Each structure stands twice: as structure tokens, then as C-alpha cells.
Image (cartoon, rainbow, N blue to C red):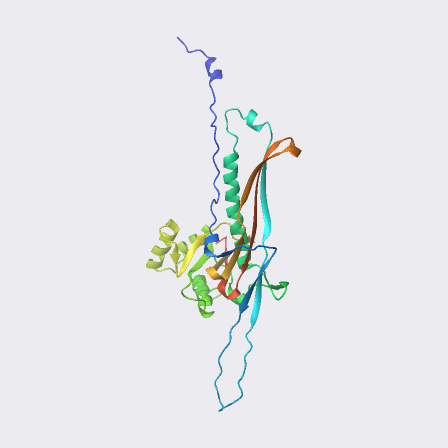
Length: 298
């Protein structure tokens, strides 16, 4: 006897009653490896002392020479950020068995806040810093603190990704600046630059094994740098701006994240989830940060 042919039209479709996040960066990767401060006001200035040198005494009972100490100011100005999500007053009713994703939305806002922290730090690392008595002077990261996209140690310059030579040059720049060797050094790059290192023909077998372990997540350091992977680094015309730094080279202001859930009477009693934060960052000193440009197409 044949099965009833009309039965399949009554088959039930089951729907999950919860929500899953799509892939995304969930944590702040840079916040814990920079100086963290909280600015209580619209701005904060940091006082800096420059370098002074001793001079040889060449005469007996000579008049004492006085040397003026160079000083400077570095300014940090946090800016407000927010993220708001609105649920219609009927959403929960019409979703039926599916839960209104309020808790997941709060979690999603937290992830967005973490990424915003990274974005602010990344922008400050190689961007414009504000200096001077009133904080209106601008200071760019000089070319002496940059490793060009076509940098080669020997031979004809040609665009490249992240190479062993570029890492050596970044290390040399920090060393020659007398950056405290006791400070941990970090290097932010994307997955593409890790792949560059794995493919380079310069690496020795020991280097290759180290980079392979770096790629596999078994270690996180190479050539004196602790690697931090970020896909949020600036990318323009296929050139990725990676950067190396020490913790004291970047200062970050965070007033904390606040999330509120309110019923909005002005929006037909919709439920609003809103997260706010005040974030800002600045380089503390150009000599503590090195930009490394990598061609993303190679």
C-alpha cells in the first residue's frame, strides 16, 4: 500500500529559540598592553622632560654653567561613542517561542565596545598627536620611525609584505632610540603578515619553526616582539599599516562602558538598548612607536 502523498505538506519546521553570534572579534586585544588612564574632563595634558647632557669642566673655579631642560606637553582628548538598538513594542509578542535577544544584544554591544577600544588605540599609534602648551600643535610620526613598504636591507627596493628584514629594521629603530630594553615590545599585524613570514625565503629552519608556532598559536613572540593579530589595522591602497611599540609608548583613556535598557515612550514604547563610552588615546613619544608598512597583495 502506498504512503499518503499529502502528508509531507504537514511536516513541521522547527525554529531555534535562541540566537548565535556570527564570527567577529569579541575581545579588546590592545587595551591591556598600553598605558590606561581615565581623563575626568574634556582633556588632559602630560608633562614631559627632554634629554640633557653633561659637559666637561675645562677651567678651575669657573662660573657655573646652567643648562635648561627641554620640556614638552602631550595632550589626550577622549571623545564620546555610543551604540543603540531599538526593539519594537510588538517584537517580543510576534517572535512567539523565539526569545527577544536582549541579553545577546548587550553582549554584542560589549564586543563592539572592545573593538572600538582597539580602533582608538590603532588610530593614535601612527596618527597625529597633539602637543604644545595649548595642545593645538600637531606632531606626526616621522619617517625615521617608519619602515617603508618597499624596504629591503640590500638590493633594489620593492614592495613586500612583512619580512624578517622589516622586523630587524623595527628592532634597530627602537634600539637606536635607547628605548628601555626591559620594556616588553609588541607588534600588531594581520593574519596576512603572519603568512608573509611563513612564506619568506629568508627564514632559517629555526626561525621557520618559531613562526610556525606563532601561526599555530603555540607561542606569541618572535625576534623580541610579542605579536598581536588584528584585522582592524589601517588598510589603504592594499598597504597595511602594522606597528611596533612598547607599553609606555601609547596612552589610552577609558571612562568605562555603560549600558542602559529603557522604554522609549517617544518611540511607541519601544525597548532601547544603548551603550556609551568615552575613549581617547595618544602616542606618548614618537621614538617608542614604529610603523611598518606591508603590501597586502604579496
